[in-house]
Image (cartoon, rainbow over all chains, first blue to last red; front, side, top):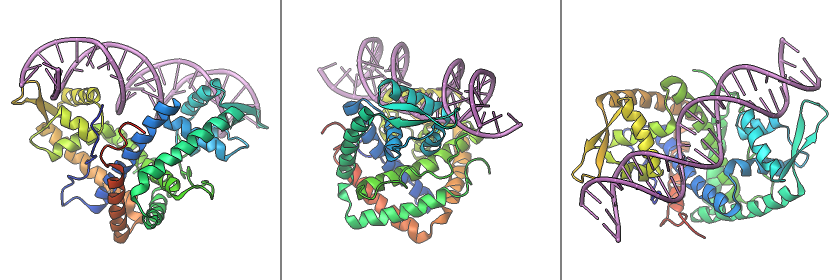
Length: 165
Length: 165
DNA sequence: TATTGTTATACTCTATAACTATA
DNA sequence: TATAGTTATAGAGTATAACAATA
Protein backbone atom coordinates (compact mmCIF):
# COMPACT_ATOMS: atom_id res chain seq x y z
CA UNK A 1 0.00 0.00 0.00
CA UNK A 2 1.35 3.42 -0.92
CA UNK A 3 2.02 5.63 2.03
CA UNK A 4 0.51 8.61 0.26
CA UNK A 5 0.18 10.74 3.33
CA UNK A 6 1.49 13.89 1.73
CA UNK A 7 1.64 14.45 -1.99
CA UNK A 8 4.48 16.81 -2.30
CA UNK A 9 5.21 16.61 -5.98
CA UNK A 10 5.26 20.37 -5.98
CA UNK A 11 6.21 21.28 -2.46
CA UNK A 12 9.84 21.07 -3.50
CA UNK A 13 9.39 23.18 -6.61
CA UNK A 14 12.34 25.46 -6.84
CA UNK A 15 11.97 29.14 -6.29
CA UNK A 16 12.68 30.00 -9.87
CA UNK A 17 9.95 27.80 -11.27
CA UNK A 18 7.41 29.86 -13.02
CA UNK A 19 4.02 30.45 -11.56
CA UNK A 20 2.19 28.64 -14.32
CA UNK A 21 4.15 25.48 -13.75
CA UNK A 22 3.63 25.53 -10.02
CA UNK A 23 -0.03 26.11 -10.58
CA UNK A 24 -0.30 23.11 -12.87
CA UNK A 25 1.59 20.84 -10.51
CA UNK A 26 -0.59 21.84 -7.62
CA UNK A 27 -3.73 21.34 -9.67
CA UNK A 28 -2.55 17.90 -10.66
CA UNK A 29 -1.71 16.95 -7.10
CA UNK A 30 -5.07 18.04 -5.76
CA UNK A 31 -6.95 16.18 -8.45
CA UNK A 32 -4.95 13.02 -7.98
CA UNK A 33 -5.44 13.05 -4.23
CA UNK A 34 -9.20 13.24 -4.61
CA UNK A 35 -9.31 10.89 -7.58
CA UNK A 36 -7.41 8.28 -5.64
CA UNK A 37 -9.97 8.28 -2.86
CA UNK A 38 -12.88 8.22 -5.24
CA UNK A 39 -11.47 5.40 -7.35
CA UNK A 40 -10.73 3.24 -4.36
CA UNK A 41 -14.13 3.73 -2.82
CA UNK A 42 -15.93 3.11 -6.08
CA UNK A 43 -14.00 -0.12 -6.40
CA UNK A 44 -14.37 -1.27 -2.82
CA UNK A 45 -17.98 -0.36 -2.28
CA UNK A 46 -19.55 -0.59 -5.68
CA UNK A 47 -17.17 -2.79 -7.61
CA UNK A 48 -16.98 -0.19 -10.34
CA UNK A 49 -14.54 2.31 -11.80
CA UNK A 50 -14.40 6.03 -12.46
CA UNK A 51 -14.88 5.76 -16.23
CA UNK A 52 -17.90 3.51 -15.72
CA UNK A 53 -19.27 5.94 -13.19
CA UNK A 54 -18.66 8.87 -15.52
CA UNK A 55 -20.39 7.11 -18.38
CA UNK A 56 -23.43 6.31 -16.28
CA UNK A 57 -23.40 9.85 -15.01
CA UNK A 58 -23.65 11.13 -18.57
CA UNK A 59 -26.56 8.83 -19.27
CA UNK A 60 -28.35 9.87 -16.13
CA UNK A 61 -28.26 13.43 -17.35
CA UNK A 62 -29.63 12.39 -20.73
CA UNK A 63 -32.61 10.14 -20.13
CA UNK A 64 -33.22 10.00 -23.86
CA UNK A 65 -29.92 8.26 -24.31
CA UNK A 66 -26.70 9.19 -26.04
CA UNK A 67 -25.02 7.83 -29.14
CA UNK A 68 -21.66 6.13 -28.76
CA UNK A 69 -20.35 9.05 -30.61
CA UNK A 70 -21.59 11.57 -28.10
CA UNK A 71 -20.38 9.48 -25.19
CA UNK A 72 -16.97 9.32 -26.76
CA UNK A 73 -16.79 13.08 -27.10
CA UNK A 74 -18.13 13.85 -23.65
CA UNK A 75 -15.88 11.39 -21.91
CA UNK A 76 -12.90 12.50 -23.97
CA UNK A 77 -12.14 8.94 -24.90
CA UNK A 78 -11.84 7.12 -28.21
CA UNK A 79 -14.67 5.05 -29.61
CA UNK A 80 -13.27 1.61 -29.03
CA UNK A 81 -13.06 2.24 -25.32
CA UNK A 82 -16.65 3.37 -25.09
CA UNK A 83 -17.71 0.17 -26.80
CA UNK A 84 -15.84 -1.80 -24.17
CA UNK A 85 -17.37 -0.02 -21.22
CA UNK A 86 -20.87 -0.05 -22.65
CA UNK A 87 -20.48 -3.78 -23.31
CA UNK A 88 -19.62 -4.37 -19.68
CA UNK A 89 -22.46 -2.27 -18.35
CA UNK A 90 -24.92 -3.88 -20.76
CA UNK A 91 -23.82 -7.34 -19.68
CA UNK A 92 -24.58 -6.31 -16.13
CA UNK A 93 -27.98 -5.00 -17.12
CA UNK A 94 -27.20 -1.40 -16.19
CA UNK A 95 -27.47 0.14 -19.67
CA UNK A 96 -29.13 -0.83 -22.92
CA UNK A 97 -28.71 -0.04 -26.58
CA UNK A 98 -31.91 1.29 -28.10
CA UNK A 99 -32.56 1.61 -31.83
CA UNK A 100 -32.07 4.99 -33.46
CA UNK A 101 -33.47 6.59 -36.60
CA UNK A 102 -30.03 6.32 -38.15
CA UNK A 103 -29.72 2.59 -38.45
CA UNK A 104 -25.95 2.66 -38.12
CA UNK A 105 -26.31 4.12 -34.65
CA UNK A 106 -28.34 3.62 -31.51
CA UNK A 107 -28.93 5.38 -28.26
CA UNK A 108 -27.37 4.08 -25.10
CA UNK A 109 -29.41 4.68 -21.97
CA UNK A 110 -29.69 3.54 -18.40
CA UNK A 111 -32.03 0.70 -17.61
CA UNK A 112 -34.29 0.97 -14.61
CA UNK A 113 -31.78 -1.12 -12.70
CA UNK A 114 -28.96 1.09 -13.89
CA UNK A 115 -30.79 4.20 -12.81
CA UNK A 116 -31.32 2.81 -9.36
CA UNK A 117 -27.72 1.61 -9.05
CA UNK A 118 -26.38 4.91 -10.26
CA UNK A 119 -28.55 6.87 -7.84
CA UNK A 120 -27.07 4.98 -4.97
CA UNK A 121 -23.53 5.51 -6.15
CA UNK A 122 -24.08 9.17 -6.90
CA UNK A 123 -25.35 9.84 -3.40
CA UNK A 124 -22.35 8.15 -1.85
CA UNK A 125 -20.01 9.88 -4.28
CA UNK A 126 -21.37 13.29 -3.43
CA UNK A 127 -21.04 12.59 0.27
CA UNK A 128 -17.38 11.66 -0.22
CA UNK A 129 -16.70 14.87 -2.08
CA UNK A 130 -18.45 17.01 0.48
CA UNK A 131 -16.40 15.27 3.14
CA UNK A 132 -13.12 15.72 1.31
CA UNK A 133 -13.75 19.38 0.59
CA UNK A 134 -14.96 20.13 4.08
CA UNK A 135 -11.86 22.21 4.75
CA UNK A 136 -13.03 24.90 2.36
CA UNK A 137 -15.48 27.64 3.09
CA UNK A 138 -18.38 28.59 0.89
CA UNK A 139 -16.33 31.56 -0.19
CA UNK A 140 -13.44 29.32 -1.19
CA UNK A 141 -15.78 27.17 -3.24
CA UNK A 142 -17.12 30.15 -5.10
CA UNK A 143 -13.69 31.53 -5.73
CA UNK A 144 -12.37 28.23 -7.00
CA UNK A 145 -15.39 27.62 -9.17
CA UNK A 146 -14.96 30.98 -10.82
CA UNK A 147 -11.24 30.65 -11.36
CA UNK A 148 -11.53 27.11 -12.64
CA UNK A 149 -14.23 28.24 -15.05
CA UNK A 150 -11.77 30.71 -16.44
CA UNK A 151 -9.06 28.08 -16.54
CA UNK A 152 -11.32 25.67 -18.35
CA UNK A 153 -12.04 28.28 -20.93
CA UNK A 154 -8.37 28.96 -21.32
CA UNK A 155 -7.82 25.26 -21.92
CA UNK A 156 -10.64 24.33 -24.21
CA UNK A 157 -10.24 26.99 -26.84
CA UNK A 158 -10.77 26.13 -30.51
CA UNK A 159 -9.19 22.70 -30.25
CA UNK A 160 -5.97 24.53 -30.04
CA UNK A 161 -4.23 21.70 -28.25
CA UNK A 162 -5.59 18.80 -30.21
CA UNK A 163 -2.79 18.41 -32.60
CA UNK A 164 0.12 20.61 -33.25
CA UNK A 165 2.54 23.04 -32.39
CA UNK B 1 -9.23 10.79 -32.61
CA UNK B 2 -11.48 12.15 -29.88
CA UNK B 3 -13.20 15.38 -30.78
CA UNK B 4 -12.51 16.74 -27.34
CA UNK B 5 -13.19 20.33 -28.19
CA UNK B 6 -15.26 21.11 -25.13
CA UNK B 7 -15.23 18.94 -22.05
CA UNK B 8 -18.63 19.55 -20.63
CA UNK B 9 -18.82 16.82 -18.09
CA UNK B 10 -20.00 19.42 -15.67
CA UNK B 11 -21.62 22.05 -17.82
CA UNK B 12 -24.81 20.04 -17.68
CA UNK B 13 -24.70 19.64 -13.92
CA UNK B 14 -28.17 20.11 -12.60
CA UNK B 15 -29.12 23.15 -10.62
CA UNK B 16 -29.58 21.20 -7.43
CA UNK B 17 -26.12 19.69 -7.49
CA UNK B 18 -24.18 20.81 -4.52
CA UNK B 19 -21.34 23.22 -4.79
CA UNK B 20 -18.74 20.74 -3.65
CA UNK B 21 -19.66 18.29 -6.35
CA UNK B 22 -19.61 20.91 -9.08
CA UNK B 23 -16.28 22.08 -7.84
CA UNK B 24 -14.84 18.59 -7.99
CA UNK B 25 -16.17 17.92 -11.47
CA UNK B 26 -14.76 21.18 -12.74
CA UNK B 27 -11.43 20.49 -11.15
CA UNK B 28 -11.34 17.07 -12.75
CA UNK B 29 -12.26 18.44 -16.15
CA UNK B 30 -9.58 21.11 -16.06
CA UNK B 31 -6.93 18.66 -15.01
CA UNK B 32 -7.88 16.14 -17.64
CA UNK B 33 -7.86 18.73 -20.38
CA UNK B 34 -4.34 19.78 -19.53
CA UNK B 35 -3.16 16.27 -18.78
CA UNK B 36 -4.37 15.09 -22.14
CA UNK B 37 -2.30 17.68 -23.96
CA UNK B 38 0.76 17.03 -21.86
CA UNK B 39 0.54 13.26 -22.23
CA UNK B 40 0.16 13.44 -25.97
CA UNK B 41 3.01 15.84 -26.43
CA UNK B 42 5.30 13.86 -24.16
CA UNK B 43 4.52 10.79 -26.21
CA UNK B 44 4.79 12.41 -29.62
CA UNK B 45 7.82 14.52 -29.03
CA UNK B 46 9.80 12.68 -26.43
CA UNK B 47 8.48 9.15 -26.66
CA UNK B 48 7.83 9.15 -22.94
CA UNK B 49 4.95 9.20 -20.49
CA UNK B 50 3.76 11.33 -17.62
CA UNK B 51 4.76 8.85 -14.90
CA UNK B 52 8.22 8.56 -16.38
CA UNK B 53 8.47 12.32 -16.58
CA UNK B 54 7.28 12.67 -13.00
CA UNK B 55 9.81 10.17 -11.79
CA UNK B 56 12.67 11.91 -13.54
CA UNK B 57 11.39 15.19 -12.21
CA UNK B 58 11.68 13.85 -8.67
CA UNK B 59 15.23 12.73 -9.31
CA UNK B 60 16.17 16.04 -10.81
CA UNK B 61 15.13 17.71 -7.58
CA UNK B 62 17.19 15.25 -5.56
CA UNK B 63 20.61 15.01 -7.15
CA UNK B 64 21.73 12.72 -4.35
CA UNK B 65 19.23 10.17 -5.51
CA UNK B 66 16.13 8.67 -3.96
CA UNK B 67 15.39 5.21 -2.69
CA UNK B 68 12.69 3.20 -4.44
CA UNK B 69 10.80 3.60 -1.28
CA UNK B 70 10.85 7.36 -1.41
CA UNK B 71 9.99 7.42 -5.09
CA UNK B 72 7.03 5.22 -4.38
CA UNK B 73 5.71 7.54 -1.71
CA UNK B 74 6.31 10.73 -3.66
CA UNK B 75 4.71 9.43 -6.80
CA UNK B 76 1.85 7.94 -4.84
CA UNK B 77 2.36 4.61 -6.52
CA UNK B 78 3.09 1.11 -5.21
CA UNK B 79 6.59 -0.30 -5.22
CA UNK B 80 6.26 -2.79 -8.02
CA UNK B 81 5.38 -0.04 -10.43
CA UNK B 82 8.38 2.05 -9.53
CA UNK B 83 10.59 -0.95 -10.20
CA UNK B 84 9.09 -1.23 -13.66
CA UNK B 85 9.56 2.40 -14.56
CA UNK B 86 13.07 2.58 -13.13
CA UNK B 87 13.93 -0.57 -15.10
CA UNK B 88 12.82 1.09 -18.31
CA UNK B 89 14.68 4.29 -17.65
CA UNK B 90 17.80 2.40 -16.60
CA UNK B 91 17.68 0.32 -19.77
CA UNK B 92 17.61 3.59 -21.71
CA UNK B 93 20.53 4.92 -19.74
CA UNK B 94 18.59 7.77 -18.18
CA UNK B 95 18.83 6.70 -14.56
CA UNK B 96 21.10 4.46 -12.54
CA UNK B 97 20.94 2.52 -9.31
CA UNK B 98 23.76 3.48 -6.95
CA UNK B 99 24.76 1.51 -3.89
CA UNK B 100 23.51 2.66 -0.50
CA UNK B 101 24.78 2.18 3.03
CA UNK B 102 21.83 -0.09 3.67
CA UNK B 103 22.71 -2.97 1.43
CA UNK B 104 19.08 -3.89 0.85
CA UNK B 105 18.52 -0.54 -0.77
CA UNK B 106 20.13 1.79 -3.26
CA UNK B 107 19.71 5.28 -4.51
CA UNK B 108 18.22 5.93 -7.90
CA UNK B 109 19.55 8.99 -9.65
CA UNK B 110 19.71 10.60 -13.05
CA UNK B 111 22.68 9.86 -15.23
CA UNK B 112 24.34 12.68 -17.09
CA UNK B 113 22.36 11.66 -20.16
CA UNK B 114 19.19 11.54 -18.11
CA UNK B 115 19.83 14.99 -16.73
CA UNK B 116 20.30 16.40 -20.17
CA UNK B 117 17.25 14.64 -21.57
CA UNK B 118 15.12 15.74 -18.68
CA UNK B 119 16.24 19.33 -18.98
CA UNK B 120 15.07 19.40 -22.56
CA UNK B 121 11.71 17.89 -21.71
CA UNK B 122 11.22 20.12 -18.71
CA UNK B 123 11.77 23.24 -20.77
CA UNK B 124 9.26 22.12 -23.37
CA UNK B 125 6.84 21.05 -20.70
CA UNK B 126 6.95 24.38 -18.99
CA UNK B 127 6.40 26.18 -22.27
CA UNK B 128 3.31 24.08 -22.93
CA UNK B 129 1.90 24.89 -19.51
CA UNK B 130 2.57 28.58 -19.88
CA UNK B 131 0.87 28.44 -23.25
CA UNK B 132 -2.15 26.57 -21.95
CA UNK B 133 -2.60 28.85 -18.98
CA UNK B 134 -2.12 32.00 -20.99
CA UNK B 135 -5.76 32.91 -20.52
CA UNK B 136 -5.21 33.63 -16.83
CA UNK B 137 -3.82 36.79 -15.33
CA UNK B 138 -1.12 36.93 -12.72
CA UNK B 139 -3.86 37.67 -10.22
CA UNK B 140 -5.74 34.56 -11.26
CA UNK B 141 -2.64 32.47 -10.83
CA UNK B 142 -2.08 33.75 -7.33
CA UNK B 143 -5.68 33.25 -6.38
CA UNK B 144 -5.73 29.72 -7.69
CA UNK B 145 -2.44 28.84 -6.09
CA UNK B 146 -3.69 29.99 -2.72
CA UNK B 147 -7.03 28.24 -2.98
CA UNK B 148 -5.49 25.02 -4.24
CA UNK B 149 -3.04 25.10 -1.39
CA UNK B 150 -5.97 25.17 0.97
CA UNK B 151 -7.68 22.42 -0.97
CA UNK B 152 -4.57 20.28 -0.89
CA UNK B 153 -4.41 20.66 2.82
CA UNK B 154 -8.05 19.73 3.14
CA UNK B 155 -7.35 16.59 1.12
CA UNK B 156 -4.16 15.35 2.59
CA UNK B 157 -5.04 15.37 6.24
CA UNK B 158 -3.84 12.58 8.54
CA UNK B 159 -4.29 9.88 5.96
CA UNK B 160 -7.92 10.26 6.58
CA UNK B 161 -8.90 8.90 3.19
CA UNK B 162 -6.49 6.04 2.99
CA UNK B 163 -8.73 3.35 4.22
CA UNK B 164 -12.06 3.54 5.74
CA UNK B 165 -15.26 5.00 6.39
C1' DT C 1 -17.19 8.77 -50.07
C1' DA C 2 -18.08 9.72 -45.24
C1' DT C 3 -19.85 8.26 -40.89
C1' DT C 4 -21.18 4.95 -36.99
C1' DG C 5 -19.72 1.66 -34.41
C1' DT C 6 -16.99 -2.70 -33.63
C1' DT C 7 -12.96 -5.55 -33.38
C1' DA C 8 -8.16 -6.51 -32.77
C1' DT C 9 -3.86 -5.24 -30.98
C1' DA C 10 -0.49 -3.44 -28.15
C1' DC C 11 1.21 -0.76 -24.45
C1' DT C 12 1.19 1.69 -20.04
C1' DC C 13 -0.19 2.11 -15.48
C1' DT C 14 -1.98 0.11 -11.45
C1' DA C 15 -2.76 -2.92 -7.17
C1' DT C 16 -2.03 -7.21 -4.89
C1' DA C 17 0.58 -10.71 -3.17
C1' DA C 18 4.34 -13.92 -2.89
C1' DC C 19 9.19 -13.87 -2.82
C1' DT C 20 14.54 -12.67 -1.69
C1' DA C 21 17.92 -10.48 0.76
C1' DT C 22 19.29 -7.92 4.07
C1' DA C 23 18.56 -5.58 8.74
C1' DT D 1 10.50 -10.15 12.91
C1' DA D 2 10.56 -6.18 9.93
C1' DT D 3 12.09 -3.70 5.94
C1' DA D 4 13.80 -2.82 0.81
C1' DG D 5 13.09 -4.19 -3.34
C1' DT D 6 11.64 -7.55 -7.06
C1' DT D 7 8.72 -10.58 -9.55
C1' DA D 8 4.37 -12.37 -11.17
C1' DT D 9 -0.22 -11.73 -12.13
C1' DA D 10 -4.32 -9.69 -13.43
C1' DG D 11 -7.13 -5.96 -14.79
C1' DA D 12 -8.19 -1.27 -16.40
C1' DG D 13 -7.44 2.49 -19.54
C1' DT D 14 -5.83 4.17 -23.65
C1' DA D 15 -4.60 4.86 -28.72
C1' DT D 16 -4.34 3.10 -33.28
C1' DA D 17 -5.86 0.95 -37.19
C1' DA D 18 -8.56 -2.13 -39.98
C1' DC D 19 -13.20 -3.42 -40.71
C1' DA D 20 -18.61 -3.76 -41.49
C1' DA D 21 -22.82 -1.56 -42.18
C1' DT D 22 -25.31 2.31 -43.32
C1' DA D 23 -25.81 7.09 -45.03
